[in-house]
Length: 310
Length: 310
Image (cartoon, rainbow over all chains, first blue to last red; front, side, top):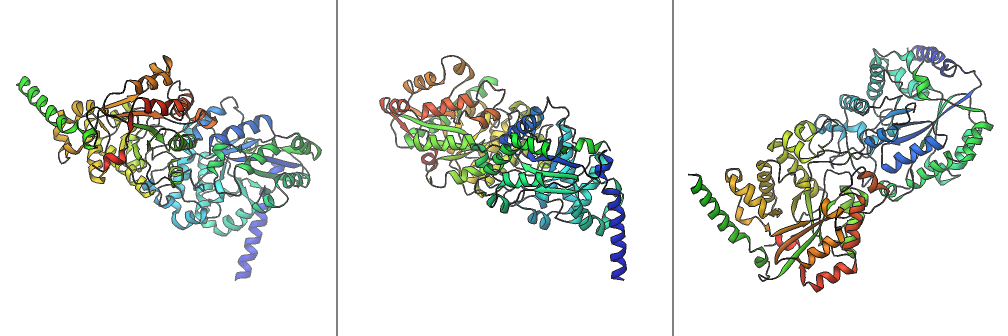
C-alpha cells in the first residue's frame, strides 16, 4: 500500500512538475536560457535598508524587492518608489522580528493573533516560536493584513514571499494560507520545488480550492549562508553562483543596506545577516563586475511582474 | 450663584497651591533657590535619539529623560542605560506618532483601543485626532500598557509625563487617568500649575480617589517654540532662559538627537522639532557654556528621583 501511494505521489509530482517546470518557457525563453531575478529582501525594515535597496535598484543590477509591512519604515518605501512605477515590489510576509533592540509586531490586533506575539509584546524572534505558538488562522489573518496594508499604502504587489521562510517551514497550513491568499489577491507567490514537493503535494487536502497548476515554481533559489560569509566570502560566492548559473528561472536572494549607525544598531549582536553583510551585498550588486558577469554569462534578468502576467 | 462658585474655586486653588507651591521647600531648598530639571523628551523614539540622549546625560548637563514605550527603539534604551542605575528616566506617555514615514502605534491591542488608531493602522498624527476619537477608557488602557511595558523592560520609571501634551490638553478624563495611574504605580506625574488650575480643580468629580495634595506641581515649564527657533535661535533662548530663571522648581524640556541620516528621515518634512533642532539641543546642553551658565547663575539641578522620594 505504501509503495502504491509513493508511486502515485511520484506520478503526481512528475505530472505537476511537467506543467510547472516550463516557467521559463511560458516566459518565452528556451530550455537553455539562464534567467535570474536578483531579489533584495527586507525593504521597509529600516531607513538604511530602504535607501540602499532603492539605490541598488536604480544604479545596480538588483531588479526586485519585497517589503516588510509590519516594520515602522514600510511607509517610507511608498514615497521612495513613487517615481518607479514599473518596479518589482512584492510583500515579504513577515511573522518574526529577529532583532534584539528594534522591536515591533503584527499588523493585526495583538489580541486576535496572540500566537504571533512574544512575551515582550512584539513578534517572536524565530520561526520555531511562530510554528509552536501561532495557529493557522492567526497566520492567515496576519498574511491578509500585510497584503491589505501594502494595498492601502498604494503599492501594487508584484509577488509574495516570506521572511526567514517562517511561512514555508512552520506548518503546512501556513503554506496553504499563503497560496490561498495569493490566489485571492491574484498575486504570484514565490514557490520552490522543494517546498512544493515536500509540503504542498503530500498535504493536498489542505490546498483544496487552490489551483496548483497556476503556482509559479522557481527552479532554484540561491542565497548566501553564514558558512559562505565566514568562508569564501559573499563576493566570491555571488561570482561563482553567476558563473555556474543553470538554465531555468533562478532567484538570487540578497539583503541590501548600508553599514551605517542605524543598521549597526538594528543588527546589533548579529554576526551574520548584519549591516556589514548587507553593505557587501550592496557593494557587489552595484559594481561594474556584477554587470559584466551578467553580460559575460549571458544571464537574462526577469521579474515577478513578467511572471505575474502569465 | 456663579460668583460664589468662582469664589469657592479661588479659595480651593489658593489652598491647594499653598500646599503645592512648596515643592522646592519640600526638597530642602529655600524660597530663593533656582532649581532646574533639564529634561530630554523622546528617548526611545529612534536610535539616533537614544545614543544622543544618553551621551548628553553622560557628558552634558541633561539630567532627566522620559521614554516613548510604543516606539520600536524603546527596547534599546534599557540596554544603553544598564550602567546608569541612578538615571532619571520616566515614561513619556505617547498617544501619537507625528512622523510621516516612520509609523507605529499603541502597545495595547488595536481592537481594544480603536480610537487611538488612524486609518493607516498606526497612531494618529496629532492630539486633536486623539481627543476627537479616543475614549477615556482607551486612553487609560494605553497609559497603563505603557507603564507596564516599561516595568517589563526592567526600567523603574522615576516619573510620568506626556508626549505633545496629548494627555493634558485632550479631555479632562485623560488627566484623571494619568494621575490615577501615577498614584496606583506610585510614580510622580509631571503637573504644571496651568493644568492643575485649569483642568484638575474645575473637574474635581473626575479626580475622586486621587490624593491631589500629593500631586507634584512644577512651578514653570520652559520649552523652545517654532517662533524661537526661527527667531533668536535655540541657543540664545536657552541662554536667556537660564539667565532669567526664577526661584522654584523649573523644568526645561528639550529633545536631543543627532542630525544624522536616520533622524533626518524620521523627521522628514518637518521644519521644527526635527533633526537639526535636536542636534542644536545636543550641542548646547553638552557645551562648556551651558555648564558655566548653571554655575554662574547658581542654578541647582534637581531630579524626579529626588521628587519621588518626598
